[in-house]
Length: 211
Image (cartoon, rainbow, N blue to C red; front, side, top):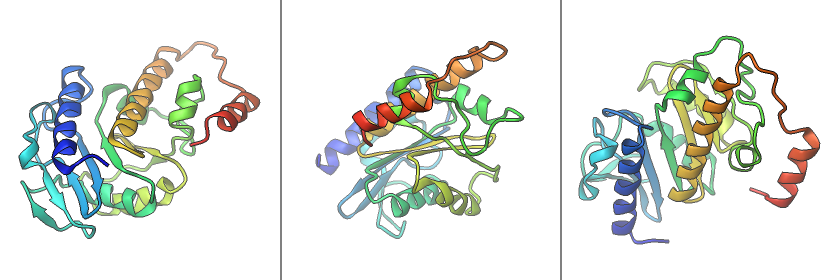
């Protein structure tokens, strides 16, 4: 594993990349990385495009602040993911436009919001359940996430945005980006007949690229 200092710097680099590409804005979104002695989380009311690595919050396994600025008010979401997914090394939560747009649509399948449009979406996300709407900061949202996150690396929060786990920070970032691009494709293809991957094609991908 990279040193804590290197991970802090990597979080700031990824945050700036997301901000510069319009995938986050203002003080929306948060990023965390698991450590051997706790985890790092972007501070509350911080802009991901201007993170100071030294001020990123460090928390223990119970979510108590050890150092740095006060953590995001959505720390409980990250903690829920880490407690339910032993292999999760990082979590990314965004309010990215296309994913949020999909989360606001009427009639989407709450068990699996997006169809398997591309191989890379299947490989990096697979199944995307919709978590019902909760007020931001409501601890009940963490419990709702727990119901799904042990079985799939990502969930979509209704009228809010995606929460994506990965084995590493890079993995979580790339999966989040793949989800956002698939959401964009899904919206572009509204009112068009589509040809999603078949169950046989999905099984072939899972056989060759196990998660």
